[in-house]
Image (cartoon, rainbow, N blue to C red):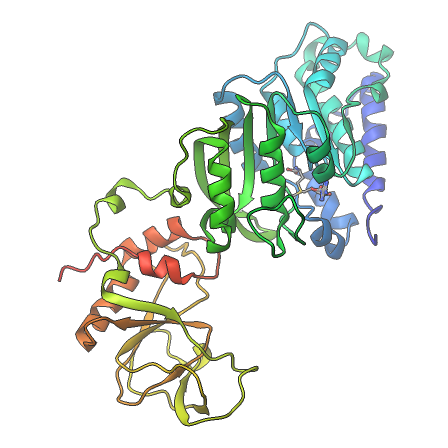
Length: 442
Ligand SMILES: C[S@@+](CC[C@H](N)C(=O)[O-])C[C@H]1O[C@@H](n2cnc3c(N)ncnc32)[C@H](O)[C@@H]1O
């Protein structure tokens, strides 16, 4: 694989740093601290081409997220052992090590942590880096008391349970794990296997890792995972969520936001206990609807029929009668238009005005005042062909006034807040628009 070995330069640097530090060389503190912080990710970006990083989903957990995971591990039931089945250069194992005590000497701590910390990764340079970084973390925890024993340590013999392996295969084949699995899996897409009973289509490697990790754990064990938001909110993963619910009892679900400034994907943090066959929640509970939303009586679906536009412009033949044609890029950002000026021939379903069009791509809003959604009301007389990058909301009572009310609901701060909670990925689903709480006064 191109770029697979670029990281060996940094793995070698870490090995040499570890040897120097454990043989008593002074003046290394600054380098040691950097090596267990963001440096491993910086070096990943410098040494390993983006193509390879994307191919294997190598995006190491940034410091802020690592702190969050560490907080969960420290507040959760104490675990004796931790496993990261896609451990990269060990950031989540470093978070786990913070939840472990140190022993009377550095040697004893390294022996103890070797028993407790387990990890797999397909890239052997990442594995070597993870082992060195854990030795460094132990060394720093003992900092004030180890001068003399440093000279006698052969650090290469520690962390033998962190090894080069395909984590998906190992989760399927190895003996069940008792303890706590920590997971920031690759988010790449993988093809179907027989173990994916929730889908027959290509799916997210993150869904597969989480599913296998949960099944690899014994009852009473724990799982803490950083996962792409689409697993929490996407309709493609409804069946995955239902299946996860039958084995996981969630202790927390935190919507986190963008992974970091280098990976523009929204993530959430899931922490759960394995309890097979417990009374499972519905898969919609993953949306974490807050209590105020639960009190709301009506949703958009009560007043509007919501569908995706029917024209796939580059595929559908230019046959049949000619209609006004609505495309996302021709529309104003919000407001009212009578009839789109572009026209196209089309043989399938067209939409009778009045109706509201909503763009399917919508970023979670960061600025408080900026609404996440905006609609455009079409109120002319001719039926309109609508591109499939748009969502069409047709009022059940056929009235333009209802469409005006919907424009207000869509752009309200309450809807932005609800939607940022309900779905953080960029592609808005019809399901999410249907469920928007109807907060209009009339
Ligand atoms: C998103 S990174 C996370 C690494 C680490 N857990 C962390 O939090 O920093 C995912 C890691 O999965 C590894 N990986 C990809 N496919 C794998 C597989 N089938 N088995 C084991 N590791 C895999 C990649 O090499 C990469 O290091």
